[in-house]
Image (cartoon, rainbow, N blue to C red):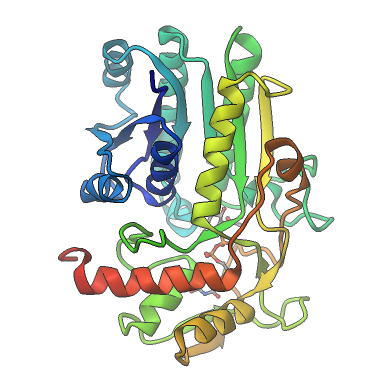
Length: 345
Ligand code: UD1
């Protein structure tokens, strides 16, 4: 019998790519999403890619009664991959309570339901934001967690703590928190990808939207950092590589090959790339010249961060396969696809 995995935020950017990889690996997938920041057609697209339509349940994980009844009515779930959350750093500064309520209440409801229904395993979507500006680079998992710069980042830190404490207090429960660096790109089929609503906050969607003519120009936030070309450095990884790590994490929990009931892994390439290098990569793969200007620094940006992914390499047997250029290419193909034929928006 196929093992049943629930993917919350399953029609979102990383959730949808993970659902594809799970189905490809023979899992039965149930998507839960409130469609706050995604479209139900994504579930159909997952079906088109894999040949198997995942079941989509549309509800809000902040509704405690609904969460409990869903898990009571759906026995036999082996694990939950929890992506569903608000994720805009800037917005979280203006709407802290919405971020704390949405990201933390949903997590608490899920953990309660897991306990009640005897679901043992969770994979949690965390972020390198927990490290702030690390003193040592590349950053390892044992680097100190620093005070969060934004309410969004704080929800990831607190989320990790809630899971850790729940697991310590609950026999049989286990979790893996995956700290993502900067996921970019789209599925090579061109059928799913990132669908930002409104003006994108993240670099790559802003680049592709500028190139396609939706935005006048990209603003590079600062070129006076202490980096070789003065722009900020991040670790950009292909979303399909990231999705595959979730499948490995689920298998690790299901096969009991985890070393501790609560584990944390960095997911990145191990290579830092500056904003200006990212632009060059885009220009190379698209053959276009991108319109951009350098402006002042963005509040809350850290100067440079990239992963030491050796723990994930060693323990999960996972490493990124796609290059920055590959990822940019799929991001650009996806941008052209959405505007041409994805949907009305
Ligand atoms: C942020 C969060 C991260 C979160 C991610 C997803 C922090 C420190 N990081 O990543 O946790 O998971 O968002 O939303 O909270 N840039 C420009 N011009 C733009 C947009 C971005 O120059 O128009 C630059 C930024 O200054 C940064 C880089 O591009 O140096 C990447 O920015 P972005 O894509 O927003 O991701 P992060 O801020 O790294």
